[in-house]
Image (cartoon, rainbow, N blue to C red):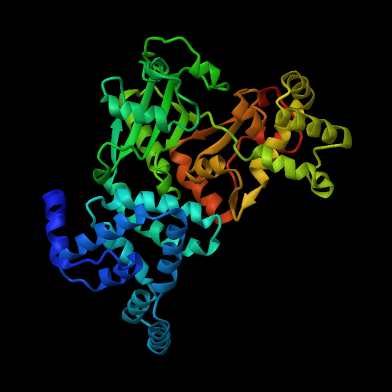
Amino acid sequence: MLDRLGGAGLDLWRGRMSVSTKQPAIDLCHRLLTLRGEASAIVIADEIISRFNAMPADEQLEFFIQLLEQFQPDPDALALAAERYLDEPGPEMAAELGRVAMPPRQEVIRNLSTSPSGVRALIKVRERLLECIKTEPSLKLLDDDFVRCFRSWFNRGFLELREIDWQTPAHILEKLIAYEAVHEIRGWDDLRRRLAEDRRCFAFFHPVLDDEPLVFVQVALTDDMAANISDILDAEPANRPDKPSTAVFYSISNCQAGLRGVSFGNFLIKQVLLELKLEFPSVEHSLTLSPVPNYRRWLQKLLADEERCAETGLLDDSQRENLRALDQAITANELEEIDRMLVLCQNQLLCLCAYFLLNQKRDTLPADAVARFHLSNGASLARINWAGDLSSRRLHQSFGILVNYVYVADKLETNHEMLVNEGVIAASATVKKLAQGKLTKKAA
């Protein structure tokens, strides 16, 4: 309504509603819940968003705390609804209990989305909220409310899959360069290579964000199972393979920090698999070439704990000292020492990486963030690649190791169910042997 009238319409209604510039933003949130007119709600929502954006950081933190504390469920109404449900359990009483238990702040968030800047502005608000949680962990409850709203607004039914190519408008291509989070795109020539005939790029968009991508994936069409990122990024341009056998997903980047925890990548991969299969019936293998971002951090903690080291059964004292020396060399960026120690530590690093990915869990899911994403989607851990990416970033994350996760269409559901229900990770025999300290030629 008013959003179609633009700024003039909003200014007109502001004048009619007499919104005091001295009225605190949190008071406007209370007022927002009492309004019945659509136009009035839009004006108040826009005013709250504008005031929040103008606040200094400390006032934004205080606003979040007030929003959390002042918009809790009514404890008396909640207790009464719970008693009524216990006295007369059934769907109607359960629905009433659910309604009363819902924090009013969720309704505040939904009403704020009616502002002309709407959902786009709320994504930025949550981006700030995620920063505040670092110093005020209690705000995690408020963040849960944002996530619930975002998951309903950004469900798969609203997402639009678009293929990105060299004919895509330049302003979107510029955003891909800016948002690439896995392997930096080094300018327009590099981007042109990633959009060549033997490459594909797809992104999800949402109607309320216009041309802002939510997540995008880059794919290489090859005839082999990629083990080294340079084989993809540094390869000379080639004509598109007539019948490529393998699709390698080598980069998946989420674009909106304020939508963290609202997963799109699982939908994206499965949709892209369908699109590629339609275009290239010859593609029989779909896999990733993925980083292991949490591996080195875990190994540092392991090396500091002699008892845990012994539990792995993979390290003697000499090997443990070598790994410490390598870790110190990486921290100090001593390139020659890094090269020397990598040779000495290769076998242990491969075995420990397999052990980490298969055995270190957060609840029932893998501790490593990328492993958690792919394995939760039903992929299986196929191979661990030595010296897959020797860039400074990957050395600091995983000693240069990359891994392959394989997507097999008729096994995705089974693998997913085994993981979430039983904590069982689908993995190749080679990876399982590595985790036990048994090296094979295929492991590296």
